[in-house]
Amino acid sequence: MLEKQGFQLRANNDWRKAKELKLQVTIKTQNIERKEPIYPPNNRTYKEEKKDTNKQDNHPDNSEKKTPINSPPFDNKSSVKTKPDTSSWRCIQTFKAHSSSVNTLAITSDGRMTISGSADKTIKIWNLVKGELITTLGNHKDVIKCVVISPNGNFMASTGNDKTIKIWNLSQRVLHGTIGGWFSGHQDKIFSLSFTADSQFLVSGSGDKTLRMWDINTREEVFKYGIYGDKVLTVNCDKSGKFVATAGFERWIKILNLKTVKLAKSLKTNAVVTTVMFSPDSKILASGGFDRQIKLWNWQEKTIITILIGHTETISALAFTPDNKMIISASWDGTVKIWNIESQECLYTLKPHNSEINCLGINATGKTIITGSKDGNITIIKQG
Image (cartoon, rainbow, N blue to C red; front, side, top):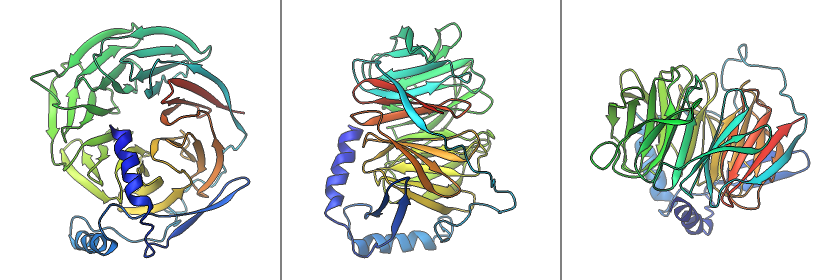
């Protein structure tokens, strides 16, 4: 359903390449210099959209500082000046993982196993070194939307269209408990999960327009945050354990303080956001969505550091390398792009699949990327 809505929005917008928005960003790759326009956000006229934006900008809680794109995100004295390792990336293995679309992936901290969730209602655990199946878990009754691994590596959580969250003991590969059901928890599909930094709590975002936090040991709801105008498609907790970023069809990125359960920051976007991700140092927030743009935010200051343009379809997944130097993006256009954050250049473009890429993961060293696609395949990409 999300995919159909994405392509419909694309069809509605492509004929409206508004002349008023002439901002262009040149993307330099190894062999290509490419320019693409920024598109209007929705079906309303540009004047109507501009009028609403001005109203929002004048609101004291929603003011957004306008800084030049490509400005440095932070104090230059603290910025990392060493160049990232740009040795070549290559696809080393592709294998058939599921009978239907691979919707979600997660990699264990030691990089030896990857977990995939699919529209075929199964979760599979793979030996990433050998590319072999270890086991299949089939406890969900509907499409799997998200699997995540706790930071301490002890637990895995899975969710999807059946409105339940299942907590697994990862080492024993057995079900630890189930959250939600017909009379409790989320009342619509659950799209996204994220563990807190201490691995004790789990945050979930749903089509019922709510964000909820759960205690994974008692499996009880800690809080429910329902100030959303539309479906919540993506959630991500920062490494400090203090904040969670959320976004979706509402076209706002909302960052909540997990201690006070209050809105810390709100960032206005021009399109539906399908993925948000904090950098490892929690200073940058990356977002991507239906507008095919990757935005890097100084979220504390509510400013855009830069916009990375190069994909030709919806951005489906984002991941930072552990050293904060690069960001990897995946898209429904079937490509993976690796970007240098400091120079804002696209270093590599890879084509690991012949169909839409729905998800990606990166290991703890930042040297291995895995991708999952609509055709049911998983591809392993390595550097060096």
